[in-house]
Image (tube, rainbow, N blue to C red; front, side, top):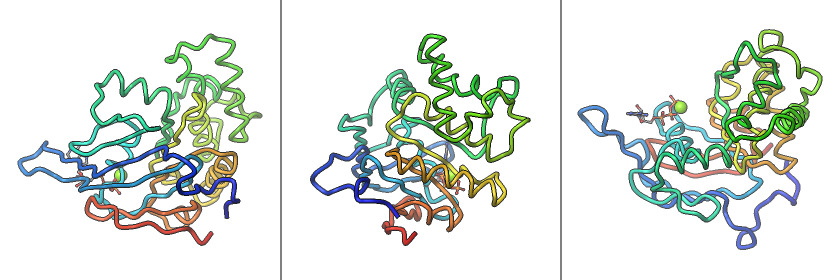
Length: 241
Ligand SMILES: Nc1ncnc2c1ncn2[C@@H]1O[C@H](COP(=O)(O)OP(=O)(O)OP(=O)(O)O)[C@@H](O)[C@H]1O
Ligand SMILES: [Mg+2]
């Protein structure tokens, strides 16, 4: 599905993400839960990867670590070559703001703000000045094909369009990595196809995307599928799509 330009050539390119023997153990209850058990993977710039596996297999935990929402209990995480396994919350927040874009099943748009005002929010936190914020928000909406909906409020948009606004908000900071946890989980099949087409387009333009899904057809849209079981990474496959 992808042209040669986006295929990582081993040895020619450094991984964007490198996890080395990552364990995550939750100790909230009486019995510790080993959510990740020795995960080692590399993700290269420009890859489009889907993550699949049964409920409870560690997919979201994996994504939280990739997105610096949490740190491993043991093991190493190198992001762009920098070890981010043991950073404090302030440093992690800085990395999240600058390098990671998140998309979730629920769109999490603010209902009282129109599309471009929603999209500019991360730039307010990043202290970007007003005029640049508006220009960048409009450019991000254009990138997801919604330039003509910039002044619409969330309740004036379809589910698929709302999710595209959420993707524009995730992209507006120009992150290295776009992470999506069940982004089509709340959408009907048509809106879901719409969002998948947009992700494919973002992939073609060079974005690095990691997407969690329960649905086989959604997984097949990515160029590589990683499978989790019981906190372990049990192999990946190239998509036939
Ligand atoms: N904050 C937490 N505290 C304690 N245990 C947790 C926490 N988050 C996840 N777990 C446990 O870790 C394991 C992995 O959870 P995770 O959310 O990563 O699974 P998942 O693959 O995303 O599942 P689903 O497909 O249902 O979303 C589960 O057994 C879960 O109960
Ligand atoms: Mg999950």
